[in-house]
Length: 183
Ligand SMILES: [Zn+2]
Image (cartoon, rainbow, N blue to C red; front, side, top):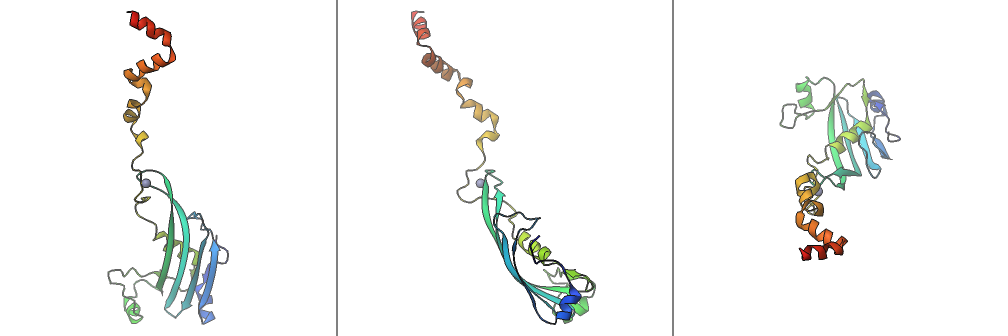
């Protein structure tokens, strides 16, 4: 829980009649990060619409899908969003407010006007959208770990190769070497 980002009733924002601002720093339970999530949110109740804008930054530790090593990635977001306060079906009213529910990216967020605005949830959603679909540590990636293939590993261990075995026995017991030469 990020201190100060408790859910706030939309009616409270409406009664405020002006922009509400949050400045925050803390850890998101659902998105563990190396550094605290820092940012700001502004929300303004405009009747049928809640305009929310804000920014947030943090650094997360991810596991590379190829080399399986951990690496750090900065997540940062800067968003401005209009949230429809009411019924999702009210397309005509949405259009009046400049929201197009039928547009390509017309996934209009909706909230029950009698419900809550959850600033922490909003930050979590914005940062989650910045998470890479594929975790790749970068150009310096060492690729697939060799130990994944047990046969490959076995061929380079001395005991598995007869030539190595001979060399090892020579090194460990020189007496045996003279016996071999006598034969
Ligand atoms: Zn990698």
